[in-house]
Image (cartoon, rainbow, N blue to C red; front, top):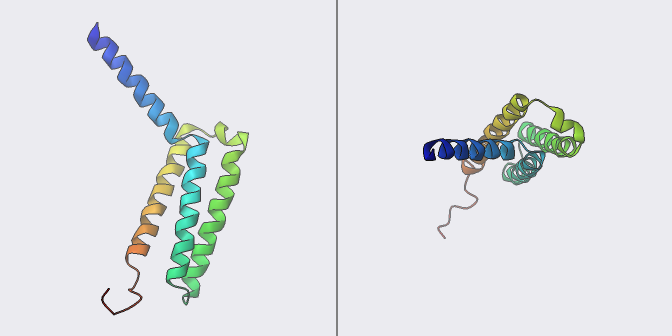
Length: 111
């Protein structure tokens, strides 16, 4: 009996966690974070035009995603598509963080 209840409790907890991961508010928060990271990344290499174009495109797409996730139609997307979008956003976040960590040092003087 306890084993069955524990298994059900875990299943409900897992279902709730997955539902939170693909909730539209989560996508709005992730898009906002990526837009901020893109803004910071654009200040790291202001002289590279190709990089700045890519960053500008990322910021624009994140603003569009925030707007789309606010619409009721976003909830109609199948969960599989939202999971794929989530994985793509996480991958983009990792790439932006790597770009920020690989940035050249501003000064050669030790602090």
